[in-house]
Image (cartoon, rainbow, N blue to C red; front, side, top):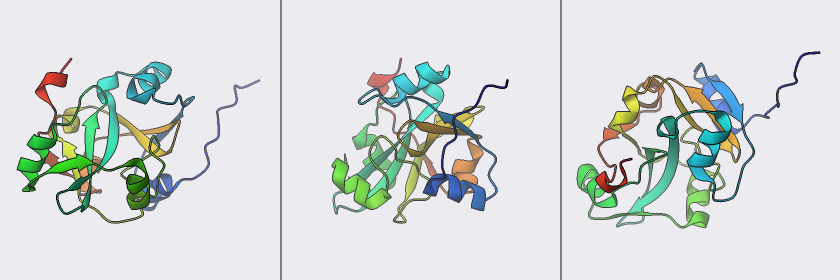
Length: 167
């Protein structure tokens, strides 16, 4: 008898990907509170550097934005602010991030956002062969080619990784 794969119901992210005819694969895993990208990478057997986190931040005027970062790197908010022409960038509080994105923190995807906002991507992510990124629910990643981020999503490349967080 064939092994039954876990069925994952549609999310706004998977609906968006299908509507834009993006090829992707689904990767459910057992969500662990505060496990982050290290936990999903371990369970899925992929390099944490290829697992991309979706972070909701805001500028000095509380305008929201998304930054996509390698799972094993931290964002330098100073570098990000400088590159996007903001005075300051800081993470949104979880409830504010949820209101902007429509997703629970830990399940935020850059696809199918509730509110249109600028999306920035760490430029080295675009050099990956494939990436794993949240599919719109805790415990659910999708894998796709990085070009989708700039060519379809419209993400702007930046160099915002904190040099001190390099592995």
